[in-house]
Structure formats: C-alpha cells, structure tokens
Length: 416
Image 1 (cartoon, rainbow, N blue to C red):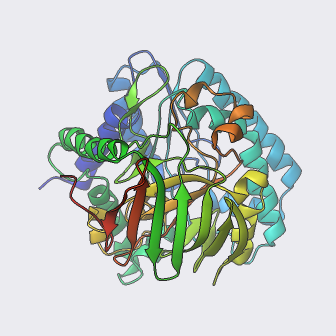
Image 2: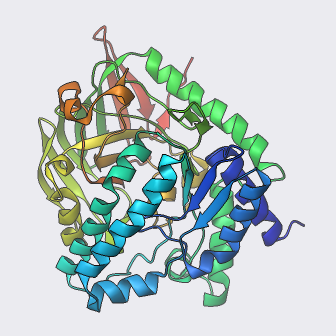
C-alpha cells in the first residue's frame, strides 16, 4: 500500500510537472498574497520544493504565513501597517514575476475565520491586500506566467468538511479527499492528467463548434440568459502561457469555461452550494441582473460578505466567467461539500463575479482600457459561486438562430 507521504510526493510532482510545468532554470514562488503557506502545509511545501529542484528550478521561494496571525491582526492590529506590508510583499513577488517565475498557491482556509470580527475591518484588510497585488494578479490572469492553485488541509477546514468523524481523523480524511478529487491518488497521476486534459479539451472544442451566442439557464430559483461576446471561445485545462508553456491553473479542474458579454446578462440566478470567501461563509445567494449589471442581491447567510464582493468596485457588479461542470463530475459524485471554491466549483456549474479572463480572439493583446468595448469585464474581484444541480437545464442559441440543449438534468448532452 502506498503511504500518504509517498502519495504527497506524487501530488507535488503533478503540481510541478503538469500544474505550473516548471521549466529548467525558472524561479518558483510557493504562496503569495493572502494564500500563504500555513504551518500545516510545511510537509507539502517541502515536497513541492524537492520536486521543483528535481525539475531544474533556479530558486524556490516559500512565503510562509499563519491564518491565526491574520485573524488576530485583522481583529486588533494596525490595518495601515498590514496594507504597507502587502505592498512590500507584492514588490518582491512582482520582481520574481519579471524574471519569469512560476507561481503556486495552496488555497485552504477556515470557513469561519473572521466570525465575530467587525465586518468593516475584514473588508478593509482584504481589499488592501487585493489592491497591493492587483497588478500582479492582472498579469497572472492574463497568463503572462504559469500558475497553479493546489490545496492541502488545515485542521479548522477539516473540522468543517468532516465534522462527522472524530477530530483526530479529520485531517487525514481531508487529505484523502483532496488527493481523490485532484486525481492524484493513483499509481501515475501525471499520465492520468494528460488524458484528462485531452478529454476536457474535446468538450471545449465541441462548444466552440456550436458557435454559441447565448445561454439560457433554467433550474429552481434560476432563469438566466447570458449573451456571449463576438469572437469568444471556450477553453479548459492545459492552456499555454503567453510564453508558450502549457500549464493547468487549477488542480483539480473539471470545467470548461469562457467569458460572458459584460452587458448581456439578464434574469435571476440562485446558488446551490455555500461560498467561502475571505474567511466568511455565504449561503443562499440570489442575484438579479439587468443588461449585465447586478441590480438586486441577497443571501440567507453572510449577506454582508456578499455585499463586500459586489460593492467592491463597478466591475464587481458584472460577471467575468461562465463555467460548465456536469453533475457526473467525480467531485460532485463524492457527495461531500468541501467549503472551498477550488473543489466545489469543480462539482458544479458556476459563474464568477468580477474580473474576466480575456477569452476572445486577440483578447490577451487588448489594453484593459478597451475591454468594455469588447464585452470583457474588469474588476478587483473574481469570485466564483456555484449554481449547478441535477435540476439544471441549459439551452443555447447559435449564430444561425438554432436553439438546442447542451445540458439536461445537470449532465451534458452527447457531443455526437
């Protein structure tokens, strides 16, 4: 039987070889912005470091942090000093980016991290960090360098996901669930991922051949139309950076996705899973759109946190991503909420509030000042929320005016 430590080494190699596809002589950064490497992640960070140097890394920088420290600092520390610290961190990260570094983050958080802390302090802290890293993140999401999100457990997160188990068993149970969801629990994860990438790309090619101009979502609490910009395309895992290096931005990933037209979203959508954002749990999201803009929103729980997302700037009142994930996704089939967007978004169709990926012909060469003109949205935010279910039906309108289903009862129709 393969030990957990041996499986972690395979997982780390997968993230290095397939995730960021680290090239010999490149620098690697592990942890950045609010996604630092926590004490519980030391063993995995060491596995990543070893795998990176095995792949020929020039230098590996690990940005260690502590979620408990962040909570106490947001609660009682100087937020002005925290903002200055973030600017200094961003300068170092940007320097390494300028030298062509690859970037790995380990998203893991306590869903209740900021419970009991004044909401305005939480919002100020998170926004100052986001602003400090905005230039870096603009370049990252523009694929100017390779990057990958790949998670590892922390105890407070495991306590929520596996509350049904004894406390001492929860972290190991979450590790096993992460490795299974990430397709990293087999004998040869790298080879399995190569085939997985091919399968996802076939689905995105099918969607591109349909020449979709509009999607119509129907489910309980959801009746939404999303228009697509001219020249848009669907993509999936295994895209090239602007330097031509193929990488996988999310491990796991089960989605095909594109950029909706900023001004062509109308109707109402209701979330089907909780959203954890910046240490707050948001449930029962309901949003209404007119001409692309969010004009009404509510949440059964965490509405203040939802307000922080939507009211962050003008662009956060619009959508930046539309992603399709069937309910026969292996993560959905696990039947377990992860309370972590990296996993839950790959169990469900989802939308993202805020910043788009420029997935239109010539989009990566566009100036951001010209994005709106081409239907692309820009924002400080990019926050996914889950809307899929076995009751979701999606029809599309093609360029020829034909209406056809692409998803029925949460599953894709045949590509034949």
